[in-house]
Amino acid sequence: MDVTVEGERRPLAAGRDDSISSSRVGGARLKRAGSSASQVLAELPGAQLSRSGAGAELSTLSLRAASSAQTPVYLGQVRLNDDLTGTADLSRIPLWMLHRVEVYRGATPSEFDQWGVGGAVVFEPRRPRRSQLNASVGVGSFGARSISAGGAIAGADAASSFAVRHARADNGFSYIDDGGTSFDPSDDRERSRTNADHAETDVWSVSQWRLGRARFVTALNAFSRSQGAAGIAIIPADHARSRTRRLAFGTQGNAPCSARVEACRLEFSTDALWTTHAVEDPDRELGLGVVSTRLVGVRVGQSGAWRGEVGPVAARVGVRYELSQLKSAVAETAHANRFTGRTTLSLEYAPAESWRAVLAAALDHHATQGASGPEGSETMPGARLGAVLSPAPFLDVRGNVGLAQRPPTLGELYGVSAVSLGNPSLAPERSLNGEVGVRAHYSKSASFVFEADAAGYARRVDDLIAFRRSGFGALRPFNIGAAQILGAELAVRADALRHVLVDVAVTATEPRDVSEDRLTENDLLPFQSRLTSFARVAAYASPKAPEFSRAEIGASLRTRASRVADPAGLVVLPASEVVSADVALAFFSDLLVLRGALDNVFDQRELDLLGFPLPGRSLHLRADVEVPFE
View (cartoon, rainbow, N blue to C red):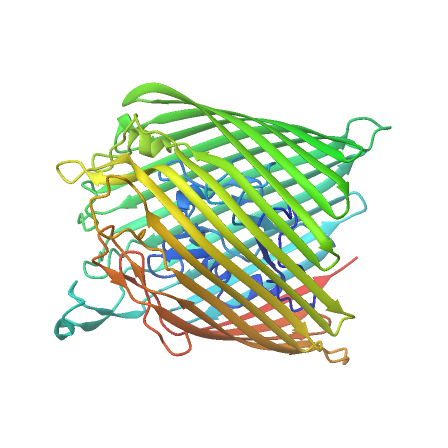
């Protein structure tokens, strides 16, 4: 569902494998004033977000009711899921240097280094296309302000860009503190969230070049954030602070097998991720049991593949080796290492333009060792069978069935502190997925474009990993039961008369705990709404005057049904309906673009995660300048 200031039209689906239910967002939607990765993903079918406060606080994604640990999230080719909980914090992915976001909801393209139980998400950075200088400045509610600058130099065979951004905010929004007694409004009072400020710096360098007939792309990202650890709503923390740092590097290339054989190519890539997360809690307000913690994660991977075509059959054989390490400055027993070897095979059979079949298989071997436990190893298979049928030029029908597994993270196996213990006997989570979908597209010249994508899906996950108390307030993970998810999705996009854009996404899901030994009467999975929707209507115009390129104004409505917040179903988070508005004005062939957004127009009260308050109505303004040069 792309909406771009430049008037560029893109399909609803991502482009790597059209046999998988997918979505793609890019263009101006990623440049909207005040927008975040969480807000963008929340507008797509099948996606639900959990946040714990302001935009710089923990935000995680659930696709089709899968846990955030079951969905790999990539920044370019670098997987961001940490080795502590397996999740990726979306608040640490600023949108300013991104070209597009691809979301694969039902399965994962075969070339990815991990096949997620709950699909996959790819944040693709912008590649340098032309020589230019650019700058941006933004301001917003709750003391938000940002500034960025960068440039690119492009030649015939090489291009390189560099950019840096600094942003900060006070995040002192007001909220209602119910004292933990939502059933008794007499003790409710309005408070202002304290110690929630943050300051972050994000640096990017992206290069691409050709060497003979080989092509290469390299990306480097450095991210640093310092922020207050505000605690929970009813027990705020006034003096705790945290600091996060990330260094991500990835390079990939491909070349023909020989000068005479274009249908055969070699692919190779290297990626590395270094992260640290430190917390200082001098007054022990967060209940960590210590005054300071520091976790360091390192992951290095190397991949190679052969891709070839013979008649209607295309094949790809890939191998990957990966080393992960997790260290805790609090408990030496939490140090752990993992070596992963992966082999994949994918076959694509396309005898005609009207249909195509895909068969993919993978074999993963994990060898792990922790200071607090014995060495363990696990071999896990994965497989997927998919097909696309095009009975008419405007219609595609697709289907998928697949098996995926998620190994326990190093933190789940060996723990990270005295209050977060490990369990070396954990078994991998196992999933069986199936989906069918239909995608229709119709266009009448450039005056009317219509696209619709509908899908139904089913998933069963066994040996789910959960946490329970294990004496003295400590938590220990364990395998428990099974979950079954059934659902349906619909996405619609229309561009009419070159002046009106409409985007709609609706998801209905039944996320159930089907464990035979379930001890609660409630069988709904926590934090999963059974109905979500998003709708946006925008009007735009592109005057022919050289000094005024384009104007667009839009309004959106995002709804989310109520959801339970505990396995017993005793705590229910209320439904929400949030209206937002945005405007964009482009001048001098997009040399200058001014944007504004008013989020949560009616100041709707929202709660998320464990009842954490979310910011109310907020105003954001942004100006972008982009100057090309020869």
